[in-house]
Image (cartoon, rainbow, N blue to C red; front, side, top):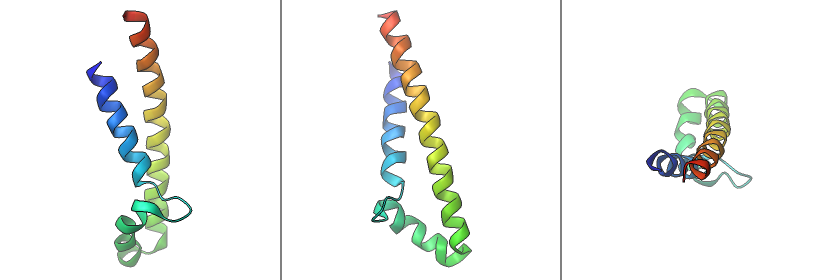
Length: 71
């Protein structure tokens, strides 16, 4: 149950940090990275956020199914 809660909070955080069509909260954070490292660095950060979202979502579903069978 604790792992599911930690995973859910991490998933919410990663989704909020991702840039959307309006650049969202991630635009404010990666704006400095674009100036310092160029645009490729910002795209790399978005790619990491996307992969982390997929991993956390799969883990969320696995933990939810396991929790459903245990209780």
